[in-house]
Structures are given as structure tokens and as C-alpha cells.
Image (tube, rainbow, N blue to C red; front, side):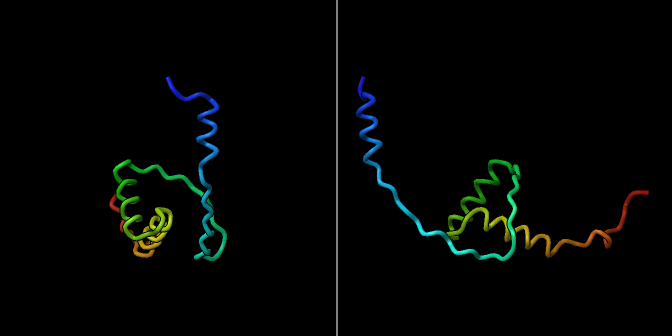
Length: 83
């Protein structure tokens, strides 16, 4: 059939470890982690848009949310349509 455990171990041992420099922080203040479930198609679009711009999905989402919130009508200015 093929690969013995020794052959598999040998193949794994030949892998190269690549070290990347950490990205510099581009934000001030404490960060929190949160999970948001999005449709698969939306995630694909986000990942593609981020890759085209050479940025992370996280960075793109944070900027998009900031932009949305900056343009959001304050809640106290909304007209109530219910009686």
C-alpha cells in the first residue's frame, strides 16, 4: 500500500519552518475577541476583498463596522412607527 510510519515521519521531518515577522500594531487600546456567524457567501466575498487589498478579513470587518456605525442614525432620532 505504501507509506510506513517511518516514511511518513521522515516526510514530516523534512518540512521547513518559516518564521514571519509580527505585524506592527495599528490600533490603540485593548482589543476583544468576538464571534460573528455570517453566511458562507458573505465570508467568501470578505475573504476575496481582503486578499485583493492585501489585508486581513479582521481588519476589513473592523473598518466596515466603524464606517457603518459612524453613519448610523442615532436611536433617539428614529421615528417610532408603532402606536
